[in-house]
Image (cartoon, rainbow, N blue to C red; front, side):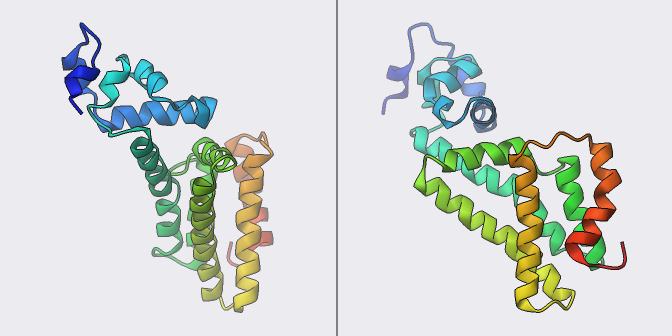
Length: 199
């Protein structure tokens, strides 16, 4: 493709060239979270970035490439830190508490992004398959922690599912609590969900 032919007459090529992949991804992510996957169109993303559609092709082959990168980002930002925390240093209780804090504080985990990707999965079998795989990865990390706590394989899996489904349901139901209120109840949740004695 001749990139220059995709530009409108008078297009600011300096602006286009200074827009990074990160800029485009941020615009696409904002649209996905705010308005859903149907809003993540080349024209709308370009408008968010202050250029015409032609500017998009300076960075991406097509919309599919951008959407693939957006999914990769979701996996990295909303899954990798959680798994690293569960499998990192510390006692079992400390690791569980640290993982829960990611959710409660929305640090290294963006629930709006997670919900937006799940809504996208409702209309895309390919995305649904990826979401299912990521859910299994997250559940497995929790199950591994519970097995380390000497629960048998079945109980570890059930506890992991309960923890995970509890949190996903929390977002799906749009529970309205302040972080302070969630922290106030955290020890009760931890004891009920884990059975650990050292919280």
